[in-house]
Image (cartoon, rainbow, N blue to C red; front, side, top):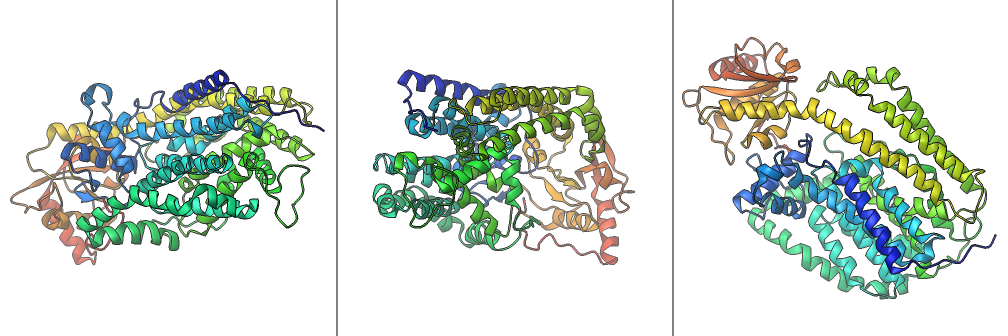
Length: 614
């Protein structure tokens, strides 16, 4: 079947598509962004570090809870800190979440615009370039991983954005005979300042795979100028690393390079042990319900144009302007191979692959041919229908959800009635897509309208169901910690230390604006707490004797408080919120209980090395 000629998009048409992409991105990632508090456990650490930069003027090393935080380079902290430095925080940023989350949200919207712009400026990629550009941006943005990490205060979304812009710029330079070759290396430098040298590895592995599959290494090398490019990247990123190493010395080297980079790749840290095939299901789940189109796009990216068959050697090079699908394939495979080889595996590690997945999904929907495309389209519709059925039967499975921090969550989820709306969103989208794709055979009009209808259902689900449920979760999980923090600020005595045991919530230190001593629920935690009050010294915390500081404030959850060694301490109850209690505890009683536990063989281990301590 002869494919219709590709038609370029007019300048006004490009502006309309980009404006629509911007509006959709704002709805998905900026709407109600500051309406909920910081999500424990990691985001408050980023937020507190960035706020401390703005308040102290120390913009070199992030610090949280009185300790340096070496886990990530400073770019995300700088972005948050600049927002925290703006006046009127109590008016526009009362929960601290606008300043902390806005870099992630804006970075995600920027990737949406970059994906759409790339396809609009290279219309040879699709039959309907305007529709393909929009569906590629939405296929990325509506990934469950992107929807989550694009709205929380961590570095992953900003890193993924900088790396994605570097990769897209690399391909655009290759396709445009080396035009603006330097842009990719500037973005790469920013990615290195966001998460470290892993950015160079991922870009390099992508380019090597692409050069091998495309069979065009000399032209790729000539157009991207990697030696000059790496010099640009180093000029942007190396000064901060060198200055921090000079100021902080061995602790920075050992923590950032030794633990957070090398050890995370070679050994399992924080009990994040996963099987070697962990990212295979992540690949599928991160693109629901159009995962079948992603698999089809991967096959098309490897085999190239024409009938579906494995190409024979030698490798045939596609014309550079027609190689975007192949480049996206290599991009996704580079992330898959690298993090599969890593010993520590987390779902967030897949985030840099989601823009490539968006490209592959949108291009696969357009490049329908042979017998495989109808199967992928039908499977995508079926998955949307399965999601609709799952939400429609929510009363059968939601009561089985066990959440110690939110014991009333199942009941309130069902009472809100939002899950029925979710069933309607996915069910209606499946019906519309099926009618557009019926009889699931190749058509000159392409598969973009059907994909767009599935995405419309997903977008409606986010706005009508996911965001209200996010607010419900914040009310049940985050609000109690904020209420306890407010009680601490109101009732704390001068120089009275603050501790939290059991469930450890860094949002307490953020909202109470002071150092918090965190310890676990076991007996070791009680012994550690007593010993740390007497001996530990960090910025904002000075050890003191029982005579100097006779009481402490202790935040404890109900389950931990019921344990034998935490009960019977006769505390003064200052307040309660959710599962948490705020005690004023006589340190003499704590010391006596700690002495009893030491006699029973419990040893204090708080001075043992803990790379993740905060």
